[in-house]
Image 1: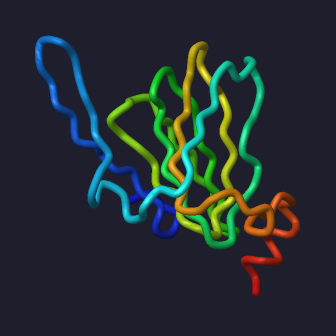
Image 2 (image 1 turned 120 degrees about the vertical axis):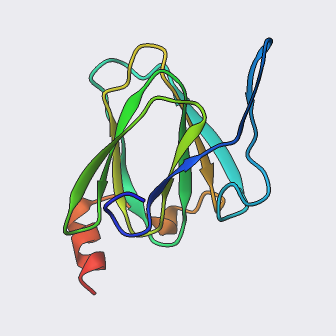
Length: 135
């Protein structure tokens, strides 16, 4: 568990043998069925990604390569989680503001989302997010 509500770090099963590691996300590894998969890569040094919240969608973030920080805000607390292992993912529940920063060279962020893209589900202004949380 992280400090913010129901967000949590989840270990992804890892199968190791002399040929290398294999990790699998299936069944109940994460608490939703993924409806969308996307990934971020070649993020320029000093750039930020994210900067939004979702009203209903959950996401599971994994650093497939390299590292990056995820800043989580629930309207009251702020927490930074560093992702840097491909067999450890961060579940971000709905109603949490997220920002991704400090991407290392070669970092790849894989995101599994509980829903397909829906612009109406996004809260893109932090001021609007604070109003959403205070309802």
